[in-house]
Image 1 (tube, rainbow, N blue to C red):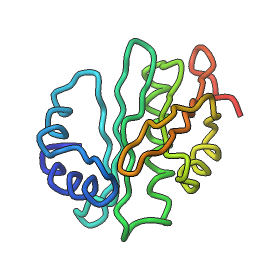
Image 2 (image 1 turned 90 degrees about the vertical axis):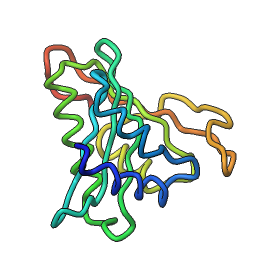
Image 3 (image 1 turned 45 degrees about the horizontal axis):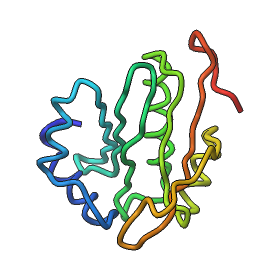
Image 4 (image 1 turned 30 degrees about the vertical axis):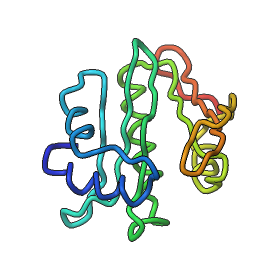
Length: 148
């Protein structure tokens, strides 16, 4: 993600989340050495994006969102695969994320990508109030393939 993507990413945030990140918050991530945000584009239009923060050898996926007009085209899969490649390159031990328990499409995608449900966070989300499913993908040592 670069500065030229911020406005479009913020628009996707507004459309996808009840408590979206602001343009200012997204722009601040560009200078965060512990963050990486990827975008998928088609004809200079941001189709979707994914952001992750790292702490030591741990990866915490912050956001993934796909614009309504680009859904069901494999964009989320593409972004997730690329983030997994990045995590392997950086020798992270795992990637983890929270997902609304009602977001069956996302949960299905994450399972397909090798993430396992490892917990639940009660009342994690607001507007509406909902539990989060905690999902994690563990990597084997020395860059070997993830467990599946």
